[in-house]
Length: 189
Image 1 (cartoon, helix red, strand yellow):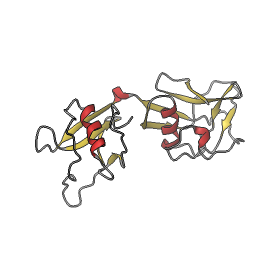
Image 2 (cartoon, one colour; image 1 turned 180 degrees about the horizontal axis):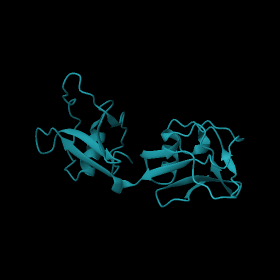
Image 3 (spheres, one colour; image 1 turned 90 degrees about the vertical axis):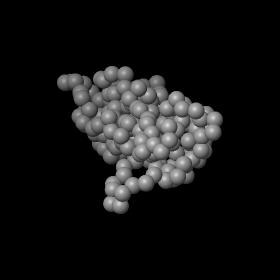
Image 4 (cartoon, rainbow, N blue to C red; image 1 turned 120 degrees about the vertical axis):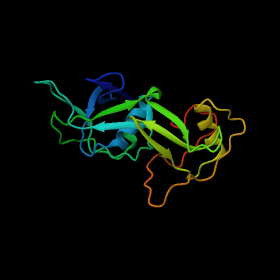
């Protein structure tokens, strides 16, 4: 399956997919960030940093053809065609699905609440917002990747203890149940 962005720029635009040698749009019915994650991942961008938008732009007089409608991805699929969807549609030309994908330049990582130079709670900045990384199933391999992406020594990286938060403090996360192999350049790879 081919995929491309049109009527936008390098990282955002309307999503079109290639099937039977023909490019067509995706209808925005049920279109969510999980669908955008799959599209951005297939385009080679960070799948965790995607944003979706609906009611895509159109040109007067332009006829829009659709391949997919009611796409309902979980965010873990490899292709939009792997997601539950309908091949028939009930969409007009103002219902084209779009995405905003982020590349590695749009993401930052840091340690906060450091007890030493090389320890602390990991936070990621995505779309300008800092959030934590949940420790569920966190392993030494995940710690190695986190240290590598921050330019820290990772030869002896170990998973740490849980972060300490005040009672009632709300903690938001960008990632949960990270599952690195240990050789990735980023937690988002």
